[in-house]
Image (tube, rainbow, N blue to C red; front, side, top):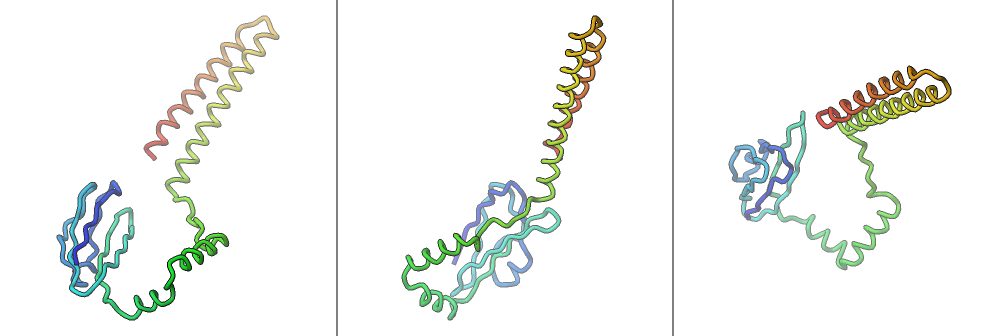
Length: 168
């Protein structure tokens, strides 16, 4: 049996050593983004595929599983397709299939940096408004200039931090 895998991850995917040792025939070269790779499984098997990430590198394991009793027992357990979907929906209602994944560390850092940029921009706006208010209540233009300068500084800091957050 042949299967084709298309790499739409945007990352290079290494071939797990177990793929070749389990009898699957393919090139051992990494799969480049937007590349298709053909895997030829041993006769009498069906595909079992696992993708894993280790130290930021993706690997794919493609193995052939023997047709055995397990497949027959699944067929017997869910003779009626509707019965299978009803059980799935019931389990979903009770949260058994919920998204329990925590935010990744990278996503959390980006969120924190953007929150810092937002609070810095807000502080800049507050300083500018405070300077304008002090100018209104006094005869001096110094508070307006000081508030505007500090507001501009905090706004620029927040802008730089926000732009750099895309590189985190």
